[in-house]
Length: 485
Image (cartoon, rainbow, N blue to C red):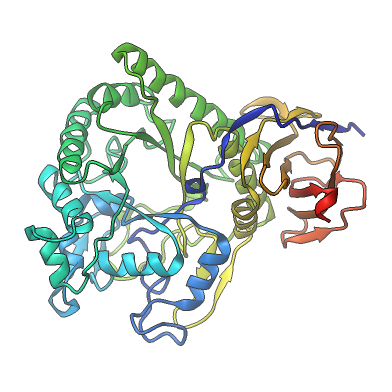
């Protein structure tokens, strides 16, 4: 049996852990909002119809930022429809998902929900059917205190204090032909630059995310990012990445190694952004916002035009198994490994729609398997990301060839001394692990959390046992200095 050898040294750092990495995504799609986070009349709903049982799970999940209101939904959304008295709000046909939108839950409800959940809102503006003026007015409504038409309208709606939204997405997947109002890279780049300029005139302190490719399989991938950034480099702080991994798209071993693809995707976007930086002779570096990612059984998805118009369609309510959870844990490892450039993340989505949290209308809420690696990575990844030296046996995949069966990253909190190692064994054979802690001579293993394809429930292993990584398993090893025992 080949041993995996992992060596840690506090000198081999990547970057501080940005708490925004552990974000999520709420879109008006399927049952994410209605009967997900918002269900008036539910036994657990508060006076505003917000499900407190879901809020409890969101806090437990450790979500830090939430992107809203889309997604594809935002590209034909009028934000004005979702503010003011509920009785005056129009019912609209959402063209993205061919669903009836009541607008009973809108901007101010989302901001109140965000406050209760303890998350930072990440707003998206409609650059599909609308543009510069509506985007700037939305910033004005959210962020100015008073004295302008939009800020005074917010106050008229009963919200005296500004929402102070820092993070803004300039549209969504504007390269996608499925998007309402999709554009070429030149068209979108110019529009994003104009919209960003106007939005910053309202509030110069906001941070802006330009749309990258909808996925790395798009025929315009990388050329899209390059063109967009050449137009909008001076206005934006981030370029977005979206990626989903389908267990049924490739061979099973390649699915288990999905993080190999994410590593390459990130590296390619970093290279593209830095090429534009050099070409334009700029000082700042563009950061990456991985603001849609997850496991998604996409091959089972029914396209909107193939469905009848419904008010609450049950869309992509995937049930997750242990292997899916291990892959999610590995994707989080990849994000941490690139913490020097990937500083915003949003797992899509939060409730019901390819989600870690599921609900029944009028009934219970529960955790899916993918809840656990996210929750514990968000809880334990503190301080600075360390780059481990790792040797491990290889595994064979159809898509990536030979790849290491074991993948790992670590974080070190200098203030508390806590050291956490996140690992996966994505192979089908057990692998013993040898930890070389010569640079941390006083650290001892205090807690070992694990789940696997065979045991998808989260368990705690005795820290005194030899470390054996079962087939297809995720692990968090928590070590602390001896004196803190």
